[in-house]
Image (cartoon, helix red, strand yellow):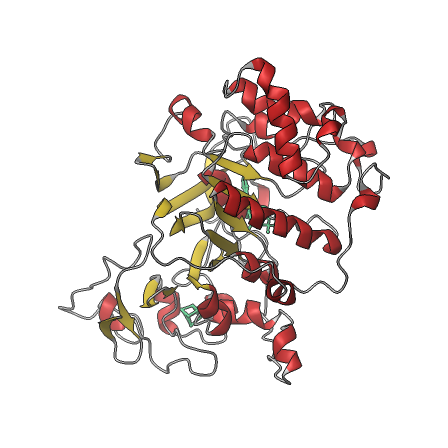
Length: 447
Ligand SMILES: Nc1ncnc2c1ncn2[C@@H]1O[C@H](COP(=O)(O)OP(=O)(O)OP(=O)(O)O)[C@@H](O)[C@H]1O
Ligand code: SF4
Ligand SMILES: [Mg+2]
């Protein structure tokens, strides 16, 4: 096909799972707009000069990594391709939006994995796949011995309570015509968790847990401020005692002074409920505070994943390095250090027709011939560190020749080497091996 599918394509509305209505992306009327004065606005204490690193040191400590924690959710080679249809009477599929294309990761029990990346890289789609608002095109999502990717809507029903979502926008994710009591209590009734006469006391208990006045269960969402509404969303997500919470940009719609309070609340909830988080955000400072482990996405792929110290301190992928260079680092500035800003040229390519080989190559300053020919595998290069780059290395120390050739059985230009046996079969497992590929010696090594 020579025709550009973008030109007159229409993106097919997607299959949305059975509980879309109950989790609710609903439209609010004008009265629910952020400008509306409300009953709670003045009760929110504003934290001036917010800096999450300082906040962490002042007692609300960032969650620690437990390297021995088992995985509560294991995602392997997960894909979501949205069909693109031609216009006209007979609407044929003329391409696919490769929103998520073969990602693998684990969410540790009681831990939080952060998912970061530019707009449109597939973060929300990943969250919606895990909560099965979308049925994946391929891959697996193992949770308590079940592959969530393969279950029918009916088979999913008992598991939906275990994997819940907190949405980005507290203004649109709550039905303005329902009282807080109805919103928070709905799932209790649907899943028959408690007898009918116990629903209200449980709702009030949950409101108290998230810092709301339990007596305000009969108020409507527009009577609350943004931060308070997000607390309602959190209470709703907690109703069924979930094991995994997908928080999709949970604080980015909030005023900066309220963000810290909601993040602190999520931390308290994590400890109290022993819940694991997939925490989606574009604010790298908040992710550093909340998540001991971080995955960086670019155009539907995970390009780097690892523990917080490694990703923030010694990133090896040029995209992560560019993203981090844009974050003002308060601590570094205090000791006189300044990170040089790396400017990314050009736009993010279309996920309908992504670049061959490495998807980042059209914007990467280190790209060479091999990058267009061969896709770099997400290679484990440290005890808890993986990067997908033929020239993976610390900023200023990227190797001159590709580090992946002998694993992939190709030469430095990416052409197959006759007789070479690729040994890359184990390179994209969801978690971490006890051995990894040492970039200096190009040998497998162990801790
Ligand atoms: N329902 C859908 N149908 C078709 N394409 C979709 C659908 N949802 C998302 N996409 C496309 O998939 C890609 C990934 O979108 P997604 O919303 O997951 O990105 P994101 O990383 O969450 O971005 P943002 O930071 O802006 O929220 C985008 O190109 C988007 O246009
Ligand atoms: S594989 Fe090549 S294009 Fe991709 S990030 Fe590495 S150097 Fe850049
Ligand atoms: Mg999103």
